[in-house]
Image (tube, rainbow, N blue to C red):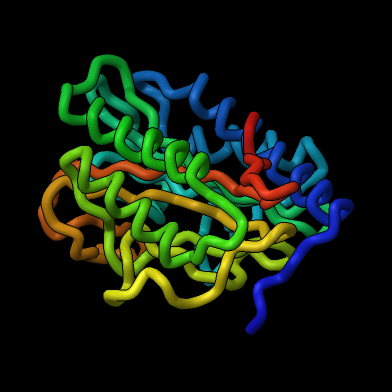
Length: 252
């Protein structure tokens, strides 16, 4: 399947959907406090998305039950919100998708709850810094496999490892489109596969483990943790390639 090349007016539609994602994530960041429950946070985000005239695109997607993937501590991605109330020292990841005017948005952040450990600070910084450094590295004509290798090298250079078997992706009129963009080089040759072109829109999302890249899916069939059982982190932006450069669409 070919990777879509979006026209400027289509990129503006995607920007509108992603701006709502950015606003919802910022609202969750502000409401990340000791004592608030994960279900309360999910409700806050869903109400905001609906108030913007959009839909929470994750709700019902592949059977996911909520508006926001809320991933607590050891859970790296796809966490289902529960009645758990945040405690000092927790870290919590929020991954939000929207559908607005038939176009999709998607982004994620990981947030500290009060004072956290130095290791968790490094873990969150790894995901965030890797995302922004990788975005800065994007050039028209480079291959997606080259970008995956850059992501992997950045994560490992900071003393962590990428989560295997999950990846970034294209986005547009569907929440997940071609290409798949792992946070590691899949195979041995980075000089292969499709090249990045103007008009492409895709999500980069470093998913960071501490010691073991192997994913384990918990009994609820959604929460993904590392085999090491340690805390993980996740950051994501939707980017569009405009005039040869990657432009972030999902800023608040």
